[in-house]
Length: 121
Image (tube, rainbow, N blue to C red; front, side, top):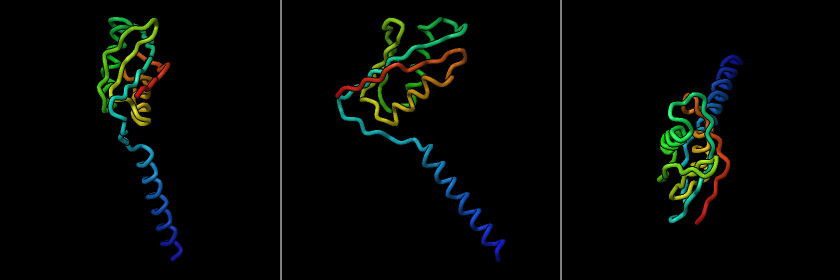
């Protein structure tokens, strides 16, 4: 009987752990206000990437645009940074997904670093 109770407790603890993991990794939608815009500034670092920083920034922005449910503009150079405009604005979850994509090693030999996220509207 004690063994059955121990197995049931272990199964319950495993189920609680799986549910907690599912909750923590769920992709949640945002509800941005209409007419709002986010501007994301980022830098790129490359190591022997064909086409240099311009191609790297454009490719990285294009790949990471798929992580949000908004329209993402092509990156525009602003000094050492690249700016993308996102309409409607990013919510908390969209911002985290986009930053994570830009800063993870999404492309071989390219890494981005988000320097600013500014939202209006």
